[in-house]
Length: 250
Image: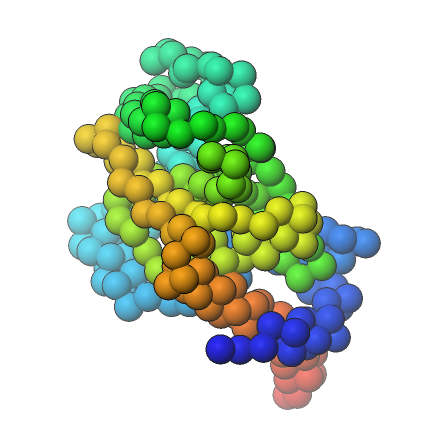
């Protein structure tokens, strides 16, 4: 296992260098990379290229497809947030949701609501917060939901993709770090909740930190993410230095 303190020492040395990246997260006017940006930049999957190529063969615009998928996720998260905060169930025709996305919102919310009813039927559940923005000198992110379930804090991450992904657990490890350092919250577990856009079903992937194997794994995910955060900063800084040096060479 990696010594987290050693990684933090490296991050502390470079955290005050303004990366000048486009981000909603800033501390003392310094740009802070978001968790998802670090993951997408530092981890590339072979299957992603094949998938992008398959879209091209079907004459589907890659960037447009990604934008539409992101919008579906954003509006689905909005519907869940409004339910958790205001007990509001999305109507089929709601001006907040574009007409082409409203059916997807209905499907993903139905999947979430099935899970929510099951959870409350079997456990004592308390909402701690929903869509909480957390900013740390190393990186920032927005937690979908933190619940207190039977007295223990649980991080819930809602996904509208159709499969589980290793990167999701790295994201959980990063948020676990943010919650500890920004909110003084020690999690008892994490859940990735896949909300199927077509079947209205949910798939729950849980890490219960009372189980040693699960706790060891999430700690490894946190350590892995911190190493990626170091590499990301060094990469951005190195690219800027490279440009300043070699752009002046004829």
